[in-house]
Length: 462
Image (cartoon, rainbow, N blue to C red):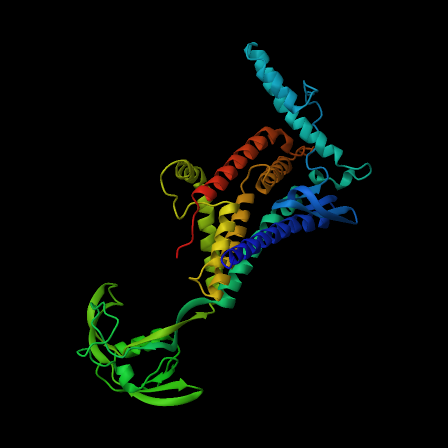
């Protein structure tokens, strides 16, 4: 029970973090849509059965049972059918049209082509009709499709942008607020003796010389204040000073129990492999050594480091999506074969939740390290949500953005060629067949990832 509880706490933290990320994503859409006057009838976190909801103004706010997505319902997502467009051939609905098509295998090619067009037209018209049904009488002017393309881009971009902002904030907290572990000027250990670099022994023998640090009276917990009259501000500076002072006696000031203590230490000459600053080669040189190791502490990083880290992580996440088809083949082979799953393999919601539980349950990481890893996990999740939603395919936000960009280009062309009329709104409903195909593919990929995360999970190192 003592082991299961931390794991469940980690999973719960992840689920809450995911739900908050989704909520803020949809809040971005909601805020932008309302700012431009679009009527939003629903703001929902999750899918499935509604757990609870309340109405404020014209919008119903609620939470559904499965917190793995969300949506806002804007009226008039698709424009009406263009004047002069042929009416649909079937009046029995999309699924019935599919049955008619499957049953017409023996029909002539022309008839089969007509039926295929009928099915595609049915999908588009049903999407238009469903969109039209959301528009209350007298509020036609508040339909989403009537917005200028630039405003539609803002509305659809606002959601993914919120995920990008969340990731940036988490990375800044992780790197600038908490920092990265690094050596400090406080001593963790003071060796009793100096041993050759090739030695694997951890105990001092009678033939091993006493370490200069122990002989000088240095103790674990001492903070090095100055060496040779120079104030020490970092471990690298201290290490460089000692290595370059072999055989010379150096005055050392340490802080011990709140007081300055003055000592003297003489680094012992020894051979060590160092990197030559001019050539970049690793060479063996005579350097000074006194036998101390630093205490690692979290050191806050500058803001530029966080910005750079965000860019690098964003590039890595984008690379995962670019190579996703190839990676999915590897996941399939690992899930249904004897091969091992790659440590860099993409993971789904189940896999990420499992990682969160492992972080919370791990005895390898200190408490602060667990916080950092959890923040890193949530930051990566939000970057993934940003990149995923920017893919220019419906029903993703990027698909709507692509349609608005195309309409904006058409408007610019009409204006440049001085045409008297304006272009009709881009009919995104025509892409409904592709949208259904994308939904099927995404669903299949999600199921494969879920299965692989159960049978061949990616585990954290250590």
